[in-house]
Image (cartoon, rainbow, N blue to C red; front, side, top):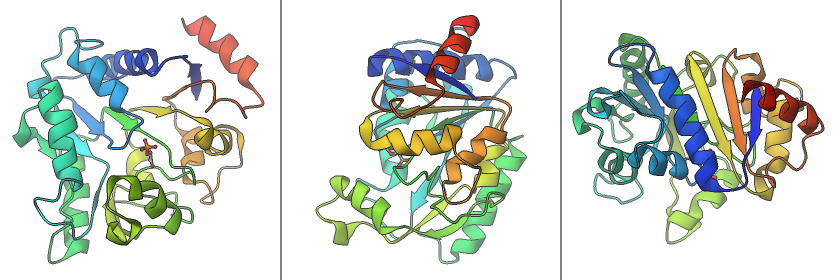
Length: 255
Ligand code: PGA
């Protein structure tokens, strides 16, 4: 795992965009794993200004969402299909037909989850995956206790996650209780992963993910086993790392 600390969200978004762009350039018609939430917005801003994407035709990229709420109406503004359309597809110029999101309205959610997993496989897997991290260490909606080998499936959202996401709704009672998420094992199959985290409220999760025991207690900790993960943090999110000097020495070597 490589860890970089940047002092503005703009510079962390630009660094992430350059790392992702390098991974996307490795094959024609590459696949990008996109994440919702506040953390990746700087990446989409960077892409929208052309950072990291020289020579890449974004309209040719196939994008896969990490997750989707179950049972939010098709026109609900917080349904991730709509959030992604607004904040990513339109903003950076993806082609809407190339953007896939799990079907949280499907009559058979288990079938929808399996279909989604297969669509990722059929696309040849994810070349470059964007991640945030939950305060409880979740990646996607893989809450603590998720199997580290899990695939795309229906999950129950924890109260902690529903509370964190209540800011997007009129109250916690409106936050869905279930979601379809790529599994931890699905995410681990991505070729390159770039995780962005900001703020003191993420510091403990960052510490556990980077330096704690690999455990389903903090699902993101499994990223320690992945060969190509870059974490881009602000100083607050990095503030509880014991090995920060070492990461910074390595970051200087890598440039
Ligand atoms: P955030 O969400 O980027 O909005 O903090 C990250 C997550 O919960 O995975």
